[in-house]
Structure formats: structure tokens, C-alpha cells
Length: 284
Image 1 (cartoon, rainbow, N blue to C red):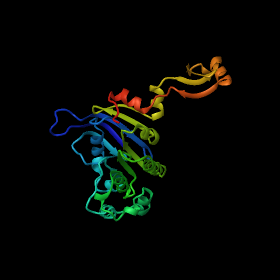
Image 2: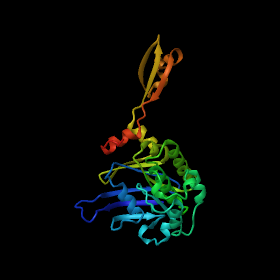
Image 3: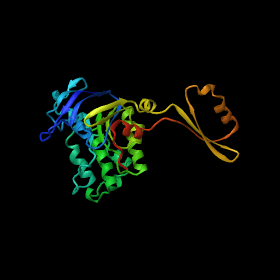
Image 4: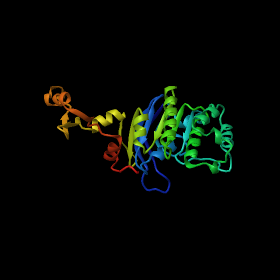
């Protein structure tokens, strides 16, 4: 769907490039995560790919054609949800949607989508009266309103409670199942782990890693099994190497004779990988 090759970009007043020769690609029907700390170049890359920023060096192809060769039809293909919701606060939710709908030749089922994200009852309320979570959900509806083939989502669940976050993630997964493609930026690693087919970690304008969450966790994790069990009323912990585990008689003896409390592999998390790869801790 997108192929980015040796992309570089420098803001006019900067002495150094913000984007320093990054390359990646993702296919149709894929959810591709673009992860990194603040200032790493995530938003800049997204703005370049959505044709908000120009003057980049390198090559970007959308559906195997140079991005700059497209006219207005490109914007009919894509939906964009910025991290900071962009609404007309003095208009109602439906007046906002009505304005944006006039910009596109085709539309999704706005009523059905707003009902699903829990905003239909508030459709005639001015957006200025919305909570931050309601604005985030309305922002997501706006990104979907033109029935796009390609979604750019920046922190789509940030600030949402677990219930509404689950609704948004389910819609994203259904969008993918129906052939849609998603470019996702988020600092919530459990969202990236759940949603993304592959992720790229970017730091200081450079891509440091690209792979599936599972492969990254296997590569950065330890091949061990941590076992907790009770023995004569005492809680005990032991660690076993996965390699050669099937021949480890002590491990199977514990499983057969002791009361198991917990058993976990030494697989790491995307949070741990984020810190290792980028050198920056995740914000709370």
C-alpha cells in the first residue's frame, strides 16, 4: 500500500534533518504500527505521507505510484485522525460531520458509527460541551466518515476509558478484516501489541527495528519458563530454560506433584522493547 524509501525531511528553521533516511513498507490489509518517543519523527512522517508536509527527499509510493503524482483523489482514499481532535467547537457534532461530509463524494454510515461509539444521543450538542473522551471518539468518526481504504490514526484511544477504547479497537480490527489498511502511531504498547501486524520503532529520526510484535518479543525476550508452586505450604519459584525443557525431569516432577500457582514464559513486552530500542521510557 505504501513504500517509503530513504525518506529525509528538514524543517526550514532547523539545522539538522528531523527524518534521517528512513525506509519501510506495508501492504494492503495490514495494520502497521509506527512507535517512538515524542520528537522522534512519528507525526512528521505521518504528515508527509498524508501530503500535509512537502519538500521531503527520498521516495514515497502509494499503490506503486509516486505520492506526488496523485491529485485530489488521494484524499478520497484516506482518513486521518490526528492526536489532537480538530472540530468546530461552536457547531454541534452533526453539524461538524455535515461540514466534513461535503468534502467527500462518498460517506460511511455516520448514524451507525456514532451510535456504536456512544455519541448519537449527543449529536445535537455543541462540541464545546463535549468531554475530552467524547471529542476523541468524534475525531475517530470523522476519520472514518469518507469510507476510506487507508487510515492514519494518531493515538486513537488516548484518554479513553477501557470500554470505549475496546469499541474503537474493535472497529479498527473490523476495518482491517474488510480490507482496510492502517498506519497507527501510539504510545500505548498494549494497543500496538493487540492491533498491529508489524511495528516499526523510530528514534531520533531513524528506524531502529521493524518486525511483528511476536517476533520482536521472542528476539528480545529470554527463552525461560518461570514457575511458582507451593511445597508444604511454602511458595517457591524456579526458572527453567525452554531449550531442553522436554528432557527436564525436575520440571515435570513439579507439575505432577505440586500445586502450581503461576507459570509464565520469559517473553518480554513491547514496553520493554520500546525502552531498549529507543532508549526512552514510556510516559505514564
